[in-house]
Every structure is written in C-alpha cells, then in structure tokens.
Amino acid sequence: MTDIHSITLRRPDDWHVHLRDGAMLNAVAPFTARQFKRAIVMPNLASPVTTRQLAVEYRGRIQAAVPQSASFEPLMTAYLTDNSDAEDLAEGFQNGVFAAAKLYPAGATTNSDRGVTAIENINTVLERMEKIGMPLLVHGEVTEPSIDIFDRENVFIHQVLEPTLQRFQGLKVVFEHITTSAAVNFVRAQGPRVGATITPHHLMINRTDIFRGGIHPHLYCLPVAKREQHRLALREAATSGEAQFFLGTDTAPHAISAKESACGCAGIFSAPCAVELYAQVFDEEGALDKFEAFASLNGPKFYGLRVNSDTVTVVREDWTVPDAVAVEGGVAVKTFKGGETLHWRLQD
Ligand code: NCD
Ligand code: ZN
Image (tube, rainbow, N blue to C red; front, side, top):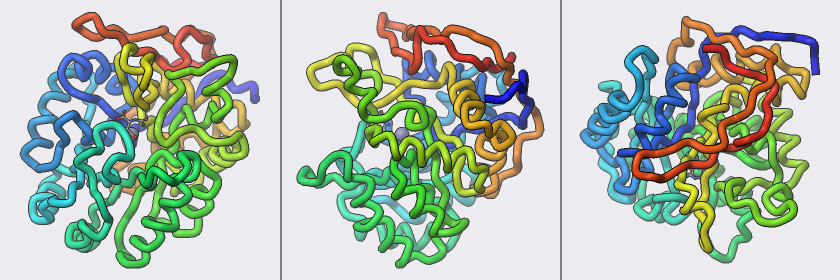
C-alpha cells in the first residue's frame, strides 16, 4: 500500500459486461454507465443477439435505460452460432454496429445453448473476421462433462484456442475472464493479437472462498475461481501494465432467488463498485501507476479505438457497498462485496 490519496485517470471502459434486458437492464445499466464510458456488451440474452438487426434493437434498449447525461457508449457483440451468417456479421462490423463477435461453446455458461457446438462449424465466419480485423471474443472453457470444472480453461487452451490461432494467423482474439496462470502465460506468448480481460472477482477471491464456512452462491461464476496461486498470477498480470491485459468486469446480474437455489446459476454482479474494486487491488499491489493502462488504455488500443478524453478521479475513502440492487417487479440482485467496506471511491 502507498500513501497516494487520489488518482485521476482517463475514464475507463469495461470490455466485458452483461446488461441483460427488460427490467433487469433498466436496473443495472445505470451503474455501468456511471463508471465507464464504453462497454463491450455480451450478447447472451435469453434470446441471443445473433444478427445485426437484433444488435441495433438491443443497443436502442440499452441507450434508453441509461441517463442521457452519461454519454455512455454500448459496444455491441454478435453471438456466434453454428449457423452464423458471415456476411451479416461483416457488414455489422464495417458499419459500426458490431465491435466483435463472441464465441460461447454450446453449454459452457448462462444462455449458451445456442452457442457453437464445434469450432470447425464457424470456419467461414472466422476466415472473414480475420480478413476484416473483427475481434473474436472467447469464453474459454470446454464443455465435455468428463473434464473437471477446474481444468476446463486449460483444456480449452490446448484443444481449441491454440489450433484456432494457428489456423487463423491474423485473427484478433480476446481470451475473456481468464482465471489461471496457464492462461496468463499463454496470452503473453501469443503477442499483441491476443488480449485478455481480467475480472475484479478473480483478482480478489480463490476457490476456497466459495466454500469458506459454507457455500457462498454469490461467489459462483464461470469460469469458476481457481486456486490461490492462480489468483496471484492474475494480480501480477493485471498490475503489470502490459498491453495484452485489460479491464473486463464480467458483471453478470442474476436475481437473488436464481443464485440462492438448489441449482444456483453462475454470475457475479460487480457494476456498482467495479472501478473501486480494481483500484483497491492495484493499491494493494503497489501498482496504482499501472491502473490507467489496465483500465483505460490497453483495451482501446487492442480494439483499435481512441482512448477516452475525459477523466475520472478515485479517492482513498471508506464507503460501504450497497448490499443489493432492486429490480422492478420485486426482484433484487446481490452486489459483490455488498455490505463490506471498500477503501477507494469513485467521485461523481
Ligand atoms: C455469465 C452470465 O451470467 O451471463 N455468467 C458468469 O458466471 N460469468 C456468463 C459468462 O460470462 O460466462
Ligand atoms: Zn461474461
């Protein structure tokens, strides 16, 4: 820890967000829009965003859900399926509707049933994306039931990611929400065309925390948190300032009733305190001087976008994270670190 009391940086962007739809969208989107200028919006709605048309409509609903004053810019992604239309995707990218396309291996996570069943099924699409410089965002976990859940990311690297990068030597890829030292090392070895997002929760919890004194469903997400050695590797990567690693919260709201259940679903909601969580980690690592690179510079550079011109200030100040956020209709979403005291606070 240092004795720095405040830090001003270019406004950050969130390169991995679930905003959902309907009442949930209206409840959660203002939190992301308050903290971030832009966000890569994940397309895994109950009915996924598979086409340019659906993305334009969804973008409109997001814009209507955030205050105009926020000047928030949602960056849309296409949900890849076995039948994705390369032409529609390419036109969407070239017309500024799509910033990227997202690969969900079928069955890997929330609303991924319509995802890709075998990577070979999207060869034509990947070829096209490579040609036009459209980034591929990957949920990097295999889905074979026989593969241990804690090994799924590692197996994905060797079984899917490595051969895909070999085959498409110019394809830009973001390895989303990495959770292991193997992923950190792999990304580094690939050079600048491969980036990785790192979530605040994977920097703060390990797999033991999920079971500390009993089962904590609100700490369950996918990819699931791994051993302590991996959390430390992620902290080292994020705070290194290296261009390949950037901020992506993977904030993923679910109703409390869906989390606290006999079969609780995966996702951690961090939007109300995301910048503060990261600031705390960078402070603990004595790396506040690298925070701007991770939060505000590396992402735009990877995506080929301008960096934001306005700034935000985060101050060393204790505050209590709201326990939960209410959604119209009587539902609520539990916040990561809800009820706990954080030592950094984003100023309005
Ligand atoms: C995400 C969700 O709920 O949409 N859940 C999660 O645990 N991260 C999906 C995802 O990114 O895997
Ligand atoms: Zn996600």
